[in-house]
Image 1 (spheres, one colour):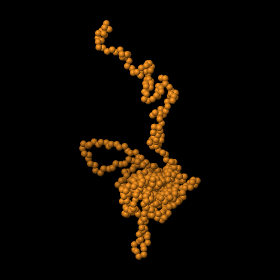
Image 2 (spheres, rainbow, N blue to C red; image 1 turned 135 degrees about the vertical axis):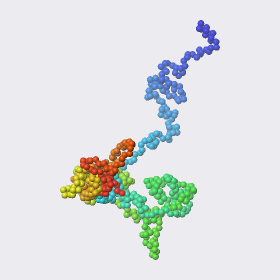
Image 3 (cartoon, rainbow, N blue to C red; image 1 turned 45 degrees about the vertical axis):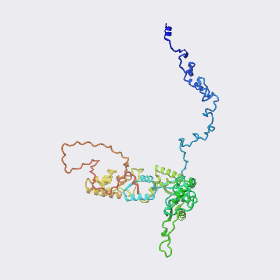
Image 4 (tube, one colour; image 1 turned 90 degrees about the horizontal axis):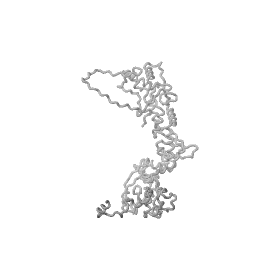
Length: 545
């Protein structure tokens, strides 16, 4: 019945028998069920003939071979493009990754050659002018006591006030020093020192001025131009061409070799450039010796002195080398140079030796200690140690001595007793405490304090503390203002508005200060203490100008 219905309703139906089974699997995936694994996709590449026969590319579990058993695959792995070498393809001149410059590969910069410090002894001393200023400051306020350690560190913190005495060691190789008497520059050859003297001190003996001149005459086929700055130097056959090259080296490129600079010079044969140089060469610099007109003898019958003719740079240098330079050169065995100039020297061995010596001195300034003690002792200054025999050392102009209170007037005895009971107070606070608000008593107390300080019966530290003299006076270091903790800012409490205006109070009395063991009146601030030493920001004295 079903077949009859099919035949009746099958008029015009398509015959699908030619399609075979309804299997839409692609041809490359057809085969055994185990061949449809995820590794079968590698076998399909064998059908691609455009890339050549690569052999079996399957993995070892699916019938492939190990990497070492694949046989001769030719040079395709080493040379991807048809097995040819890079030289055969015409790309042999292409630099490899390892042949590129180091900075293109992101590697480290080339290391500088190791420079060994000079085998010399470096002793650190105070500069004489700064030392003299310190001594005069101590003597101007003889009652002030300054910490010796802080004075030593002051010289180390200011390189211009610190002198380095450099001398060769006994067992080391001999070193020849050459030093300029005018500025203290240190060199290790006479030629180097002469070049420095000419470059730095020629202007001390000669005046230079720029004058107008006529443009050079003649026919010039080319002109030299600096390859670094583009400045026109002049024709190479001109008389002053070599002088111009040396001037460029001296003023523009002092660290460059002359042969290397001449290799960067290019010759331009353009007539317009030659004419441009000719128009720019209408000025020249001349040199005239200072004071030469006054020193030159006047001719007979002439009232005016004979004018010394001006010369160019080369003639001025020759005259300077012959007349003035020999007096500025010296070759000592030991040189004294300030720390700022030593650290800027062109000799790296000297720079490293001086830097190591300064760092060692900062850990413990023993060299400066001995130098300062000797200089202060020579000027009759006094020394004492605070707190204990191994405490910090101080220098003062007046020798501290205790007051004999049994034979002193009551005012002085009371003042010394108050200072002993209240250590480390400023002179103004002591005077105000003893005055009890009376201006006359405050004035007398200030006079008594000043007299005791001048006689050495009281000691005033540089930080403002006042103590009584003893074998080892009391001393407490104070923190610098920058190290002191700032008080927390607290908002002011809001004051409620009164309902009625407050009654006026006539002649209000100031509140009494808090007691500190004994009754201390309010310090007087109307009249300043003329003899009170200023309290610096730190214990280190301020730098002297």
